[in-house]
Figure 1 (tube, one colour):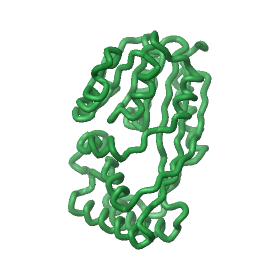
Figure 2 (tube, helix red, strand yellow):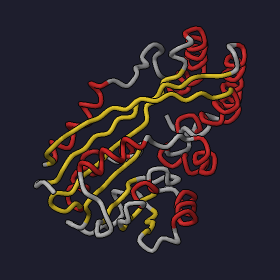
Figure 3 (tube, rainbow, N blue to C red):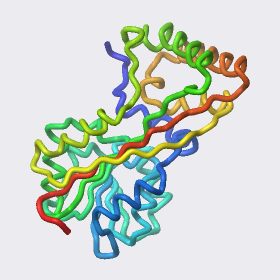
Figure 4 (cartoon, helix red, strand yellow):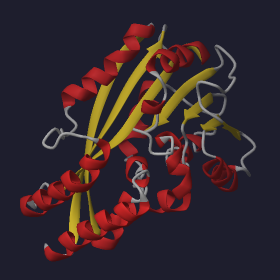
Length: 268
């Protein structure tokens, strides 16, 4: 099926909304990364798929030199506006697999809810090649689950997804699965195939509450939702908003945040 868009680039069409509505990541993720690998003023880091910079700032605060790799031109400009005054920050616009980076240079390569866009057989070997001996790769993501505490609302939203989203993408209804620890373990072990060692994974939890309007704005930042034809998407979103309003006006999102860590060769 051809949506007329490459899903990986659709975020860029909603850059400002993405920056406003996406939740960022819990502080425990960064503490865990920095416990795993020391990052300071003499360190060099690469971020794969920086988006609006929600994971960029906590790493920049270490004083390291940071190169942001971002495919979207709008996001790249946003990153320059946010962090361009920092002389140790730079943006390279392009796909990670295409951007030239020096080998054996970096202490940390990290990617927040973005590395799934990079082909595995290209991405992991490239990360390995640009890391210094003892350097670390940190991959983390936010995995939302809606209305766990309101099964009636969850069922109604699921029915709407069957009618709109699943029909659009040819997805069989009833096949939706939520993120599990087994999945985190599976992702964590991928780098082992490419020579990484000292594999770890960690899970974190949080909850967020949205009004119906806020929730629709959030959905408008998801690439697979943006790619649905506008008229159908607007009808889909309108019915989700109406369902939320009928069930009290808010929806609770339960987030699982997973962090996978891997090291190149020796221990720092």
